[in-house]
Image (cartoon, rainbow, N blue to C red; front, side, top):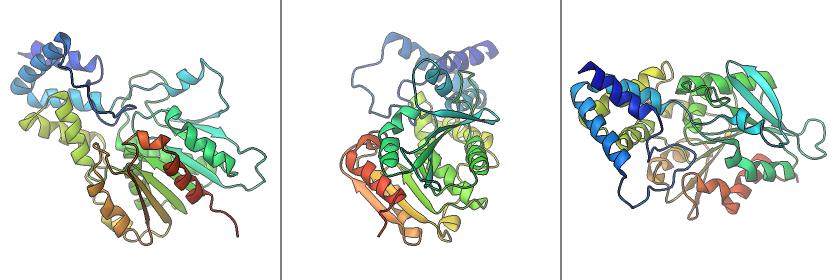
Length: 312
């Protein structure tokens, strides 16, 4: 049965799960039934998961953590206004200065979610630059070139700290989706952040990972192994690390931005974050969803105003 186990994992590793969460498009899956190829893949997966649940879970956990993005390759084929700063370790910054920004202008780091792309943040970057803010966008390991390498929570945390060390501390950080979870671990490790905006935060990260496994078609023991493997690969930055200790003692300002119809990260599970962080602001929006909120004008203005408050 060994060949069948490997083939089942390889079939699914050839491309992303059709409804995989936490990707560039988090819109609900189409209502039409699956095609023949999807049906056959799911059938093979079901057999592999039953015969070799640990092996199948390991292969799919690695696939889940492998981004589909190649941001620097994409930028190389078109005109753009970014200065690309190589931070080493397959990590990069896309740097842009505000028009006529004075010396010492606020600098903000945008941290996309896992498998997120720069283009998602175009309107936020524009709004910040109009307010005189210089903006950097972090490109995580596995997202720079089409190398098919893993980007775990540990990679994300390390990349944020590398960007901060390279720049000499930021005045504010805007984090989306799983990057918000990474920011909590960054703060726990001692990095300071005067202003932090967390967008579409899946505070219950194991639940999001479990949802991802279910979208692959996993269930039962294999699904449990899948969540465990994602957690183990992310070590020492575990996905189930308690968040309350760092939140309840945080000193910086926090803005939590969330859509009320975010099906990937239900707002009911995120509200406790704003309640536990001293002085936090919670901005809920009826428009948009998990990713769509990045294009909601009222949400963008709220984030930009928070990062660059008007001077008295």
